[in-house]
Image (cartoon, one colour):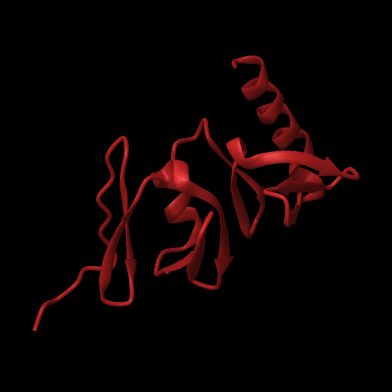
Length: 121
């Protein structure tokens, strides 16, 4: 019987491992659209599917590039490269059919990071 260590990640500049049930899946962090907390698990949403990882959102965030991912809510982390617009003052649109709420207390920080990213392009 093989023993998996769900507390272990393999991270390189181009790949990140995600433990899903008893499988180890490698994903390029650039393909992650957003991550959402689900108790002590994290839903990792890719453009074509969703993975459930046995890590907290905070642990997943520590493994992702800080210049690309930003926490917009205590339960949500997004890849700023997928932002296509805003709806009102507190909603980010990522991909045509996904709208996520920005926490009021994080709004200024989120907008500053997004604007800095746009200026560096």
